[in-house]
Image (cartoon, rainbow, N blue to C red; front, top):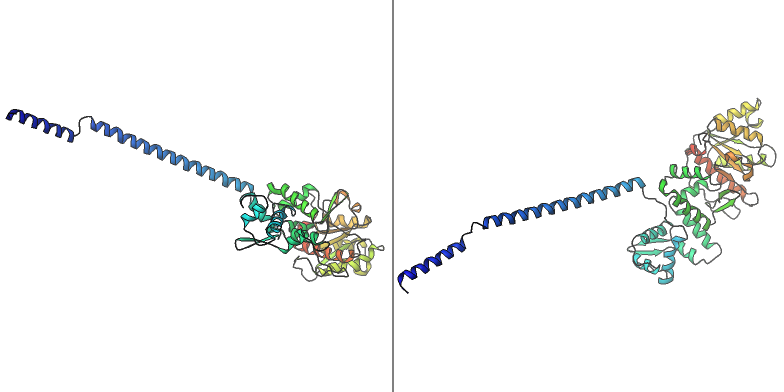
Length: 396
C-alpha cells in the first residue's frame, strides 16, 4: 500500500471516530423529547398522587361528619343480657372456664378472630360483668358461672339481675323507673334522649335491649296496657326490711317539707304514720298533712294551699280516686310542684296522668310496707335533686 492510500484510510478512520464521539444534529432533539416525556410522567404522577390525597381527605371528612351526625358512641351494651352470655358459655364449655385469649374465645363461639362484631360482643359481656380482662386474656366471672350453671333456685335470675343493674345506661334507666310503670312511648323516648343522653339514632336499639334484658331477668311485668318495672334494687332482711338503701343523694336544707295528699279514711288514712311519714323522714324532710292536728284551726282550703306552696316535694296517694286528693293534686300541678304519685292499682290513676311515673304497691306482698317506704324515700330524694322529673309538663 502506498503512502497516499494509508493516509486516506487514517483520515477516514479518524473521521469515523470523531463522528461517533460527537453528537449528530438529530441527537439534541431526541434528548429533548425524552426529557419532555419524563417531565410529563412526573407531572402525571404528581396529579394522581394529589388526586388520591384529595380523595382520602374527602373520605376522612365524610367519615368524621358521619360520626358527628351519629353522635357519641353508646355506652350501653349492644347485646341483650342473654345474648352476651354466648362467648362466656363457649369459654366454659370448650375451655373449662379457664382464662382465654380473645381470638380463642371467638373461635370457641363459632367465629374466626376477635375483630368487628365479635369485639362488640366481648365488650357487651364485659359491661354486664360476665367477662373481665386479665392481661391479654379474658376471664370468666363468677356471675357468668351462676347464670350458666346455677347451683340453687334463683341463681340464674339473680345473676341476670345483677348484670342488668351493673350495665351502663341500662341500670340508670332501670333505677329511675323501678317500682313504677314506664311512661307511654313518646314520653319514654324523650326521657331517654334528654335525661339519659341516649343518642337519638340508638333509641330503638336501646329499648329493644333494655326491655328484652328486663324480661329475661324477671324485672318487668305487663299490667293491662302498662309495663311495670319491679323493684329488685334492694337487699332485704329476713323480716322484709331494707338493709341497703339505693344510692340516691340529695342535699336537703333544714325545715324542708313534703306535703302529703291522701284520703283520711281508714285504712289509707293510717298510711300517713306507717308509710309516708317514715319515708319522708328517711329522705331527710319533714312530713306535713292538711288536717287539724298539723295546721290547727282555720279554713281547710287555706291550709291546703299553704301546705302546697311551702312544700318542696309532694306525695299523692291516688288509691280509691278520692276527689279531695285529685283537687289538691290539681293545685300542686298548677303550681308546678314536683309530685310523687302512689297507687295500689293502675285503674285508680287517671288516663291523662298515666304518662307520669307512678309508684305501685301490692298489698298481697307481705313486705309491701317496707318496700313502699324505701321506694317513696328514694323518689323524694330524686325529686329534690331533679325536681323537673316530677313536675307535670302542661306543654306535653
